[in-house]
Amino acid sequence: MKIEIGESLAVSYLKHVKRCVIYQTNWKASSLWTISKEEKKELEVIFEAVRKSEEFRDISKKSEFNQFLRQAEIDALGIDQAGKVYAIDIAFHEKGLRYGSTDEEAAARVTKKLVRSYLAMRGYFPGREYEIIFASPKVGPTRDIVIDKAVESLCRILGDVNREKFKYITNDAFRDDILRETLRVTKDDADTNELFLRSYKLLRLYCPELKAMFESKE
Image (cartoon, rainbow, N blue to C red; front, side, top):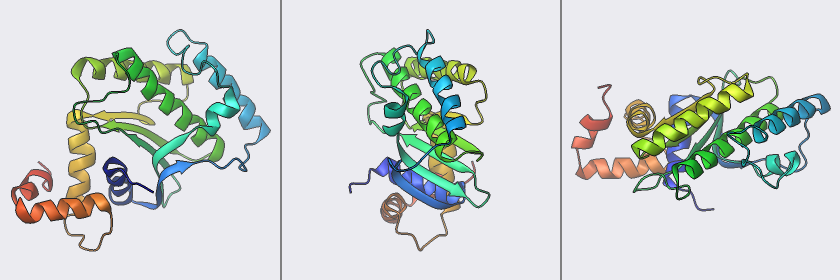
């Protein structure tokens, strides 16, 4: 299976920064897993509230709840020692986040991923604390604002979700909170088979300035 470099970074971030003891890429639910009737009923109500709202009326034009949830696929998922679940979707486009031709289309794609991850966390990890992240290293300024506002609106509709549970991390925050922090905490870890970290260590052999750039707290 092909592993994207962004997904490899996400797994390293979960393992070393979030201290997850269980982690994997391309997480997808099994059709054999079940959700309690009470939880499913509540999630169906939430799903309908989201897609009937003015802001997110196009989030699921054709899919009903069961199909929408089955289509959930998370780039990287991890569980820490306390049982907290982390779900990360990461998008790396060199020229900036694509996801459609307009800012509104990009926001719709991002929020759709967040809703699917939210339903999966509630359905398959009931009672667990969770954190859902969408991350991208480069998003244009206007698009960034539109997406951030859409995430805020989604939190209000869901009711029980705040920005501590839903995190939208881009641009400088991506560099500092995900990339730099992952490299900083793993700087002395010589025994890793993670693709992203091994690639970085290879580059550092020829670019020693990377050490000062990414492995300090500044």
